[in-house]
Each structure stands twice: as C-alpha cells, then as structure tokens.
Image 1: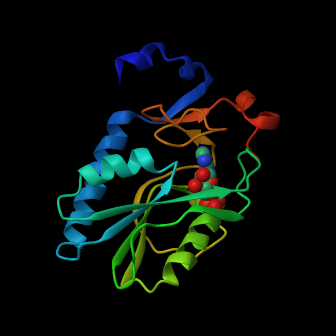
Image 2: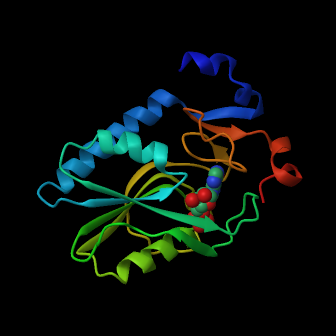
Length: 194
Ligand code: IMP
C-alpha cells in the first residue's frame, strides 16, 4: 500500500477493498506471462480504451516480455454520469495504427453488460485483423447481455457491485486508488447501483 493511501481523502468513500493492490499486481503479472507465451513471434497490437484501462495496460505491458505495439482508443458511453451502461458508444479517438492482418488484443478494464466491448469488436473486426481477442481485468459475468465475447484473458470475476480504483471511476473520481474498492452506497446517485 502506498504511504499516501493511509491518509487518503478518497478512502472515506470506500465501503470495502474488493481486490487489494498486491493481489491485483500478482494477477496482472500472470496475465502478462500468459500473453507473452501465447503471442510469441506474432508481434501483437494491444488496443486499450481510455481512460479506464490506462492503469491496467501500463502494468500489463510491463509484465509482457515479447515485442508488442500499443495503441489507444477513446470512447464515451452515454451513461449520463451514473453507473448504468447504456451501450450507446461514441468514438472520441480512433487508433493511430493500422490493424489489418495484425493480431489484435483488446484490453479492457471491466466488462459489465458487454455492450461496449461488442461495439468495439464490431469496429475492429471491420478492419480485418488476423485475430481479435479480449483481455479484461474485471468481469461482471452476472450482468452480461452480449454472450459471444472472445474473452481469453480475465483477471477477476466480480459480483454485481459498483467498483472504483485502478483506473475505474465514478463521475471521473477515484481512478487513482491503487486497489479495486466498492463505493459506499450513499455516494452513488440515488443511493444505490442502477
Ligand atoms: P458494459 O458496456 O456494460 O460492458 O460496460 C462497460 C463500461 O461500463 C466500462 O468500460 C466502465 O466504463 C463502465 N462500468 C461498468 N461497471 C463499472 C463499475 O463497477 N465501475 C466503474 N465503471 C463501470
């Protein structure tokens, strides 16, 4: 735990630490090792989504021991600032790299209903990559609407609770917590998860 965390102002809004920093880091290292094994010789391109996945991708790529290319997309999902995903996604920043005939790994912070990932997959598939898979840190399987997602790498399956930290936000806050925490209900709009 970072020293600054002991007195962090953000901690008062956290009901419970769901995944401590050490556990996160250990799992991210395992995922990095698995990706290094599976993609050896393939020079994959890791596509990450701003802003939620930046902490994860920064640690994940440092745990990967083969050559990779890194690229970013930015999207906004019309959630109205609340906690429910609408599935309506707007592309704010496209990739800089071409992905045609490349091995593409889409790196996500969390997959909830799956609607956002499904939109991104459609967009990427249209560019004819050689392969296209998903690596997600967190998976809320119980909330899934889209069933056929190619999630090959999964950090943790988590219950249906709203989490923040390690890149994940509530109204743009809490991203800088080094762990995954459950937000107190009274902080969430309307007193509960939508
Ligand atoms: P999906 O389209 O329902 O899969 O939602 C994916 C997006 O919703 C993520 O990229 C997050 O931005 C957001 N999201 C879903 N659950 C959570 C959560 O528990 N905390 C923070 N953001 C979340």
